[in-house]
Amino acid sequence: MTARTHSLPLPVRLMNLAGEGASWIGLQPIKLGAESLLEKARANTGLSDFGGDEFRGPLGLLIDSLEKEANLSLMGRLVARGDVLRTLENRLRMVELFRRHPEITERPVERPIFVVGPPRTGTTIFHDLLAMDPDIRVPLSWETCYPLPPPEAATFHTDPRIAQVQSDLDRVDALIPEFKKMHPMGAERAQECVAITSHDFASMIYQTQFDVSTYDRWVLDHDMRSALQWHRRFLQVLQWKMPGKRWALKSPQHLWHIQHVHRQYPDALFVQTHRDPVRVLVSMSSLVAELRRLSSNTVSLHEIAKYYAMALAKGYDNTVAYRQSGKLPESQVVDLYFQDFIKDQVGSVGRAYQHFGFDLSDEAASAMQAFLDDNPADKHGKHLYSFADTGMDEQELRELFHHYQSYFDIPSEPVS
Image (cartoon, rainbow, N blue to C red; front, side, top):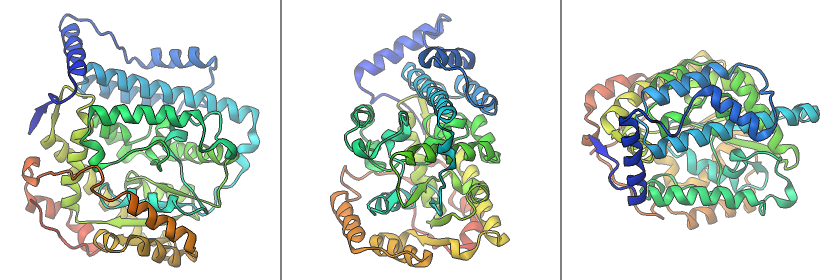
């Protein structure tokens, strides 16, 4: 199913039509050239040291995919340019901070918890619950978007960047209101690691926003060494003046790179979430299709599902292989099944804590339950989607995902 983005607000549709008209006559008002973006970032910050050149190849590949594959609307070009430019400016400022304060990189990141699993399997709500524990530090949306100057304990909940980011997120909700039914966002809610690894331009966040399949295939196979080094430094910046006892982190991307995460954080603890992979594919494809409406002139749910069927199978098989290898000690990983989790969410956190040798305090458990009470799954309405809209064959998908589903003994759910 291919749909025009007809439900965007009229001013946005008119702007996009103007962009299409300009492109028909060979004009492009919003340019995405890598070199021009690098130069603009230097000019905006007054800085020039990006901290190595590893990111330049991936940046170029991303820009190339945006230009050739993403079918960007004028709004999409504005979003893409703004995201890349902000990321480059963050990187410049962070390198300068390390130059002035090298002691930041000496602060340890000990026994972080990584929530690992495909989208739509409870990873977000599990991460949100961990954020309710006073002993847990999670990266929040506002500080991952604008990490510098480093957040401070005294102003952590009053920093003006919170309002800035919330305003940006509110605009997204206004433009694509259906999206918050699937993935509510907030400046002070936990953010994923993809927002951090984007600073080395090795992130799957771009494929959810834009069709950049060539770039994303590179990300799937990337060894993430440089990106995860940046990931650690990013956490060290955030914890410098706002420390916590332990980090809790989350990203579906770790499904494809769990061995690389474990290499960078050998003492890490993993909560791996599981759900019927066919249901995951349908729900994920629907989410991505909704998000891409903001940036693309056309959106094909079938093409999205086709791509993610391949990508998810690759990620599933990767985690099975690493778990089978025995390199990740069983004491450092907990398997969490979606159907069990939704029956007892706080209890599921408690069982994970017990496995890792932690105590779930009464204070933390009460805060977690209060969060659940305030944020029911249908708070913003129920998002409806249909397997038939993907154009996929269920039996073929069952065969594609069989190895993963069999290894972890994941029950199938009805699809509709």
